[in-house]
Each structure stands twice: as C-alpha cells, then as structure tokens.
Length: 212
Image (tube, rainbow, N blue to C red):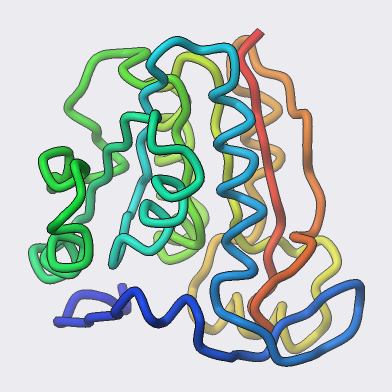
C-alpha cells in the first residue's frame, strides 16, 4: 500500500487546486470538490435516523471526516486506519473535535466488531489499494457491520479509457465492485455511476447500496 510510510496531509489540502474531471471536461478545482458528493450521500442516508452512527473505512488524514462533521455535527462519526502513521495524521487534524475519541486501528478485511455496529459505512479511494480479491472481502465486511447502507467511491473499468485501465492494472487496484455489491444479502444498489466530479485521471465510480 502506498501509505505504509509516514504520510501527512493538512486540512488545507481540501482548498488546494488539482486537475478534476467534470462532465467530460478537465479543469482545475479544489481537492475538496470530489469528496463532497460522497459526503452528501452519507449525510442523506443518515436522514430519519435518531443519533446516526457512521464509520469511515480508511480515514487517512481525516479530511472526509472533517467535511462530514462540518456538514452535520449531529452524526457520531468513527474512523479507522491500518497503520500508526496514518491514524496519527487523523489525530493531528481532528485533535480539537469530538471525533478524536472515535479513531482506532483496524483491518477492513477482518473487522473485530459485531454485525450492524454502524448505521452507514463509507470509504473514498481506500479499497482500490487492496486489489480486487481483498477489496471484495472488505466490501462484505463493510456490509456486515452496517445497518442501513454503504457509500463508496472507488475505481471501475466502466467508462475508463485505455490509460486509466493500464493505470489500475499497473498499480494493482481493484477494478470493479459492482458485481460483488449486487450479490450482497438483502441489498439494493440505488446508485452506480461515474463520480460527478473526480480527480483526473483517477477513474472513480460512485456506488451506494442499501439494506432492504
């Protein structure tokens, strides 16, 4: 994984410019833009739930948690990372927020927690790094510990150009989680599409699965 060594991103990264793809066109925009769509959908899934409890898989430097907490401070947000260095980044960035007590180390392929522990579970470009086989295991674990649904933004071969397909193969990324999601027990896929705004050229598809 690319984050095994110490790697730190400040909250300021959200406002820095990067190449983004929007409606087929490439332009410069803030790094935070591609994350907002996922964060909005997590918040939407939490509607009509009393005291919603949410888990971010691979919280990295805490940027997504920061956005979600800013959007809806009433959500009880938890997050975990696989390495000490990455969770240290999250702790630094979220030190003065109530989320600081909800951060921990874990392996998404083997979550040591009961079924239905959280209302919503989400991840943004985390499972991609596990490769297809482990990403499928991780998705099933995320499904097991959620009550209402999961929200993902991960690579997909659908809509990818030749370079993006080569990039996914070269980096050993997972390529498609749709076929796994549609076989999850008591599941209904309500969204599967290219992210409205995404970092270019990082192929990214939006997947929302609800329990029925």
